[in-house]
Image 1 (cartoon, rainbow over the protein chains, first blue to last red):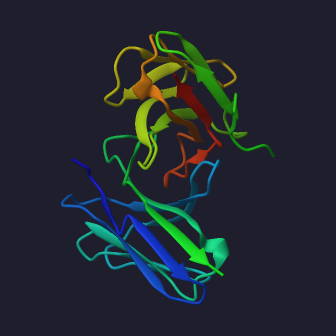
Image 2 (image 1 turned 180 degrees about the vertical axis):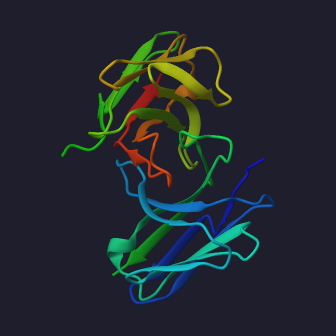
Amino acid sequence: TQLLEQSPQFLSIQEGENLTVYCNSSSVFSSLQWYRQEPGEGPVLLVTVVTGGEVKKLKRLTFQFGDARKDSSLHITAAQPGDTGLYLCAALDRGSTLGRLYFGRGTQLTVWP
Amino acid sequence: DAGVTQSPTHLIKTRGQQVTLRCSPKSGHDTVSWYQQALGQGPQFIFQYYEEEERQRGNFPDRFSGHQFPNYSSELNVNALLLGDSALYLCASTRRTERMKKLFFGSGTQLSVL
């Protein structure tokens, strides 16, 4: 069983559209991280959310941490082809002082010009 | 300032062979983790090294072993390769004293087992 469930698994949209991807779990986390991974590259950290209800913005990307700290969402406004990639959510293992991550399967986003 | 570097970028092996993958962490980082990413999946934690010792291990068999050197670089060894070991192997580094863990990943080694 997957600790973090991401949906949708695939998303294909036109440039300019808005989209939301979700990361859900039955477990409570001290923090969640979002990464973007492009083909042939490793994941790159976009944001860390820590406080329940927290909202963070990164240009056209808005990240939200659920009030109960069990889920998170990523909203992209006016998507661009450069946003294409695999979006991964990850939770830090509370018992690990060295930064062990549990990843979801990811949402593969394709934005067409 | 170089980020995390991994070598080789691609590797083709046959079943039963052994493979060694290498990783140099980002400057200033002392902790190295290895992840396996199968096609269509998120990365899965293999193990983690700090002060030249394995500190934490995921659900991977003993065929997977590693090492960390005094300069913080690391190797991942896989013995008796299986077809199912085909995946992208990612190395990530961080600094143990950093409170909000920021992991920096390398571009990975794509391993194909035929």
